[in-house]
Amino acid sequence: MKLNEPWWNVELEQKPDFEQCMKRIYAWYNQEITDRPPIRFSAHNAEYSSARLLEGRSWAGLKERWWDTDYQIELFEHQLSHSVYNAETFPVFWPNLGPEVYTAFYGVELEYKEVTSYAISNLKDWSQLDNLKLDFNNPYFQKIEEMTNAALKRCNGKYLVGYTDLHPGLDCAAAFRDPQQLCMDFLLEPDMVKKLIDISSRDFQLIFDHFDSILKKHNQPSVSWMGIPSFGKMHIPGCDLSAMISPEQFEEFILPVIQREIKPMTHNVFHLDGKGVATHVDHILAMPEVNAIQWVQGVGDDFPIMQWVPFIKKIQNAGKSVVVDVQVSELEDFIGTMDPKGLMLCIAADPDIQPGIIKRVEKWVR
Image 1 (cartoon, rainbow, N blue to C red):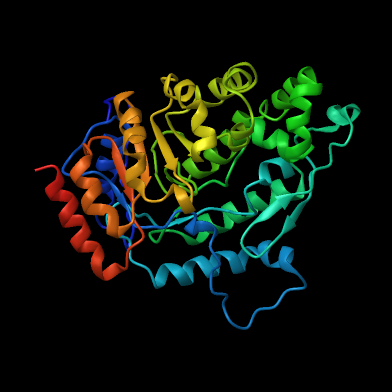
Image 2: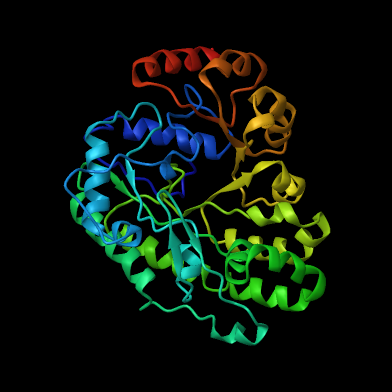
């Protein structure tokens, strides 16, 4: 932790080691290490996995279930009472209406599924661009605010409250326009694409600061779906659709937007979703404001993690920390190959074997 960074302790029933865990997190932000690398016991995308519903509830449809504020908090609290939070696994409730809710703040409707939701793209004609305006009275914005405030009233001493999943920039533009159409627009209407991406990012800091202010008034650290807190402003930049564009297009259309997005933040952990997005990793590593990369290796042939060791080392050698998903069966080989400095391990493991994993990781640095 740097001397000029804010710091306070948070008393949590299931995290008596909160302060020590945060020291490990802050060392990791700075590519340093205390006694061991941070460990988060969670499977990738676990926050979007299907949760067992509480009994005795019914809704007219999926949207009504997603929008039931009391139920969503009660479901989280039920899961909380049946969970353990070892190592750097923090109990975090974050208001969630799906990964494209940022787009919905501008009037786009979302279609709901069991564990996620999708934007119903509505920008069919470029003449509609001027209709894309942020509205604080928008029902989606109001619902996220309601969920945030309701959780803050109930969380005291039990869990952290985070901010929702925010995706400005290119991914927001794709949700407005439709991803396939936007890829065509890059070729046919590049000037309009630039204008749309600018609209999709211009209010980001206003939105982030709005919710960050609410949380900070309740002494909450900055945290979201990734579960990595900061006492400053912690942001998760990403650009999943960049897997579909060239490095030259990334540099021209996307890089300036991301640089504006991350500059005001204290900590940025870039969500690098797969080898398609990794095409642009050199541009991302060159940004000093990016503290770390969350490497999402993918599924199928993209397992096991060992094939990505040279790539992960490249990130480390660029002075960035890395979040990696490691299977229990891969842990020994991974530890035997890697320098622990700047690594955070995300591991899906049953609670009964978690203490043994922690002890093994502690030996890694001795």
